[in-house]
Amino acid sequence: MSQEPPPRREVATLGGGCFWCLEAVYLELKGIEKVESGYAGGAVANPSYEDVCSGTTGHAEVVQLTFDPSVISFKDILEVFFTIHDPTTLDRQGYDVGTQYRSIIFYHTPEQRATAEQTIAELDRQGIWPNPIVTRLEPFTAFYPAEGYHQRYFERNPFQPYCQVVVAPKVAKARKTFLSRLKA
Image (cartoon, rainbow, N blue to C red):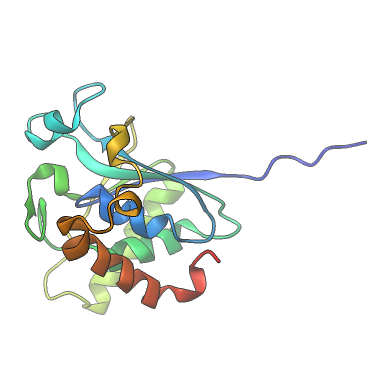
């Protein structure tokens, strides 16, 4: 009796400001099997939140997604990414300012890099934003999970003021825009 190979999974690592916002949106999408908040792109191993917030480690706040590409493509993931943050502001998202809040895609494969480059070029051509996209593309090197209290933060703290003012509107926009992609 032959066994079928396990389903193929891919990983994406994205930074678009505060990781709580991205995590809350991606947790609701079909095909996303795991979402973990953390840090990538810096020079220090296992940084703490305080280290990253100091702006001295070079890390960005990111989410790392494990997804089923037969359900949601990397291009689909990027479509959501570019809808829920402003990719035209350098090292900031709203009131969150610093390199840790930069818009960045850490690509895991040459295919992810090509898809990201193509997506950015298409969006710039469409002129959706009045300014050019400044999202950085860098090869993935390492991911460090954030402290436990950052995981599923919005889900556990929906009435926290930052969540109500910043995270909730992004989640609402994503739900409205990507209704057909939401988990049941």
